[in-house]
Length: 100
Image 1 (cartoon, rainbow, N blue to C red):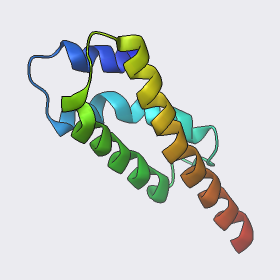
Image 2: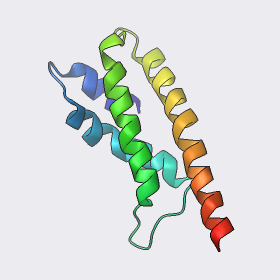
Image 3: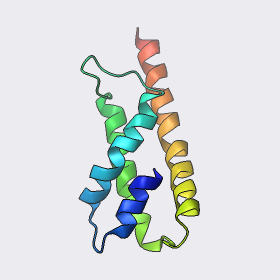
Image 4: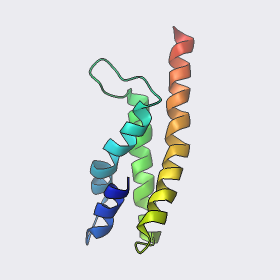
């Protein structure tokens, strides 16, 4: 996460696509720990949607970042990401289990 945020902070100009490309793999790795992967090793569409929305939320917040403290910034963003993605992944896993 710190590497991704560092790369985003180093850019002169970013757009939401940059945040999607850099952060989605990181956030998907977190989610895959809690949600089952499909046969082709992809996350279920419901979880992928949560990740995409969350990467957009990070982009929406980035203008208020203090780029001088990357450790705090990374910790804050990772904490928020975990609070959003883990429950969504666990809820999806529980829904799938209930349907079987």
